[in-house]
Image 1 (cartoon, rainbow, N blue to C red):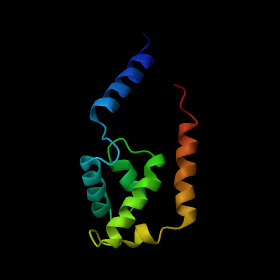
Image 2 (image 1 turned 120 degrees about the vertical axis):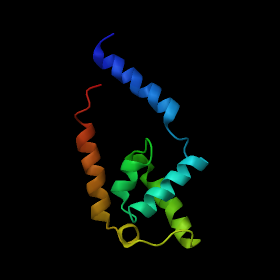
Image 3 (image 1 turned 180 degrees about the vertical axis):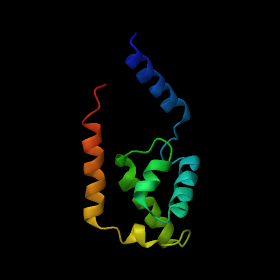
Image 4 (image 1 turned 135 degrees about the vertical axis):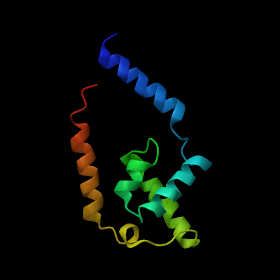
Length: 103
């Protein structure tokens, strides 16, 4: 087994053991904490919720909008007034960075 294969295997072991199950109580707690701590900054939210990816963004946004509507969290402008251009930029950046993944 090469060193690359070893670390690739260890990454998936970590992912399966420590990553949160989507929509679990723990993930929702982490999401709410990240949303309030980073005042709605989706870049920081995605960087700080365990094992989240750009693919989680629409699901997270829907959950957060529900919390805002229910007045469970504050409506931060960084979240509610984020532009389409900003969201597209985040997706382009992730696409660009993952294009270098050779695993």
